[in-house]
Length: 116
Ligand SMILES: [Zn+2]
Image 1 (cartoon, protein in one colour):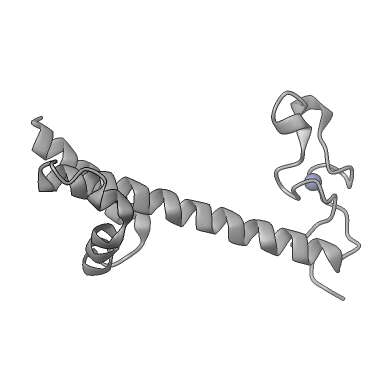
Image 2 (cartoon, helix red, strand yellow):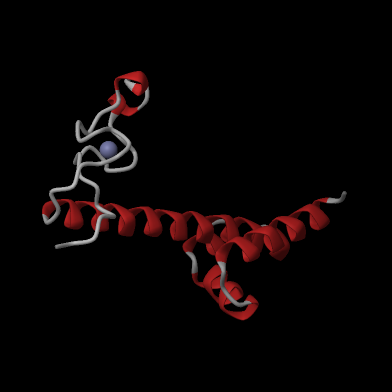
């Protein structure tokens, strides 16, 4: 596969992952700072590079929204997180991020439980 083919394949994969329309994704790439970080590069490489940066931003945004939801819901529920049993930490995973439960982010609350 040539460099241009692999860059295009990369771009298509990231377009699919973005959940955006091809036009919106192209516009998002062109507006991303990464698109202009290497102005001397061929255009196909600039698109592929910006596409990766756009996807990273989308994922960071999703993580931030999930985190905000967990923190907000955990304040108003009394139900315990099923994964960590309400401890907020899982000792078996203490080597990963100090064992903080990924499901409740250490709050110990079941943030998915219906509010009473
Ligand atoms: Zn938990």
